[in-house]
Each structure stands twice: as structure tokens, then as C-alpha cells.
Image 1 (cartoon, rainbow, N blue to C red):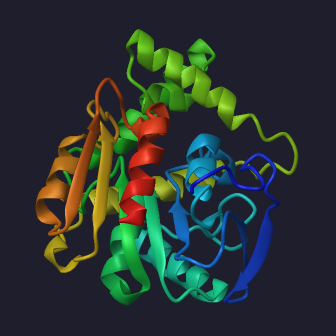
Image 2 (image 1 turned 90 degrees about the horizontal axis):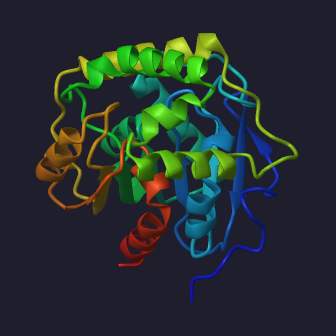
Length: 282
């Protein structure tokens, strides 16, 4: 029976592991013994940008591991400027952790990374959850830089966190959910992760732009079960990309949330966790 993990995302300790002479910061908790779920995070994110309700919800039934990419947060090294190099780092991290098989949850940029991991090491991956993301060369992904800067500037001028504009709809419901999400991100008060520098942010944007202008990949080779999730009004990675993924992946299930945006998995975290647990257990 799925329950709450013994520790919460707000209190789970941050550890490090050496991967090819670079220290990677990570957090791991939840029951061991089954296939772990590796979280792959979004643009400008560190460990503290994962919604505690999503992490705790999935960790109630699975061993959850989230880590900072190279050069991000408390991880050492220099941030790569391609999605492919980030995926290679993720594979090296998973290997260093000693896992022979993992499930992946990739949100936004993390979803790009997840697709490359499966293509490079299909035997390593059992199931994949792709949230708020799209394929290489996907429609409108080349606008991420423009949208991110515009919404971030607007957020600063109005005293908001940029994620409130970027991840949520502008309806009354979306605005209320965005405030609740930001409050949840502040639940961890001790041992918080290091913030992402402007240099890292710009490097990740270059990687995303390269992904956006990349030739489309042959997704028919990804035969693992894939859950594709998004809000109906994703302004960062347009929702049409979720439909495209679901249509091109041979074993995909699509879930689109009403009145939700790029961060639909956070806005509708209860439904997302329930769907994810069902998908991972199937």
C-alpha cells in the first residue's frame, strides 16, 4: 500500500557522489528494493525546485533520486551546453549509484534529457514520464529564451517568482495554485541547495536552443512505456509538443490537464501523483 515516505522532501539530507572526479549532489529517499525513479529537472532548477508534494507522493511507493546537473546547485564541474552532454552526465551518475535499471521522470529540459538517455542506453530504462516537454526540433521550443526573459522581467517588476508566470495559467485558479506552489517550495528551511548562477542559466538556455533547432529524432525506437503529461496552455514548451510526443512514441499514454500550464504536474499535483503511481505500478 502506498503511503508517505518516512522522511519528507523538506528534510531528506543532501548527499554527494563522485562521478568521474566530479562531485554530484543528490537526494534519495523512499522504499528501496524496486526500480528507482530518477528525477531530471528543468531550466535554472536545483534540488529545491521540485514540488515536495510530487516528490513525497512518488516516494511513498518508490525510491526517488533527484540530483543537480553538472555545475548546477551543489554539484561541481562546468554546466554542459548541450542536452546530449547533460544526458551523458545523467547516465554516468546513474551508473555511479549502481543502478542497473531505473525509471525516469523528466520535466521540461529534464524531459529532453530523458529522451536522449533512453536513446543512448535503452536497457537502463524501464518506464519514462515526460512532463511539460517536447521532442528535438519541436514546435515553439526555440521561443523558450524569449518567453523566459519576458516573463522573468515581468515577475521581478510585480514582486513574483518567475515560475508563477512561466509555469501557471493566468486564470484565478492558476494564480492561486502558483502561490501555493511557491509556498511549498519554501517548506525546506535547512540545508537548502545553492542557487543557479546567471552563467549556468544562460548555458542551459543555449542547450535548449540547440535542442529546439535539432533535426527531429526517430522516436519509434523508444519502445518503453511512456506517460506524457502537460497542461493545456503550456507557453514555454507548447502543448502541441506533448501531442506530438504521444503520437510518435509507440507505447505512450497522454494526459492533458485543464486550465494548467507548463507546470501542470505541480498545479495538478494530486492527479499527477495518482496517475504516475498507477503508471509505474502497471
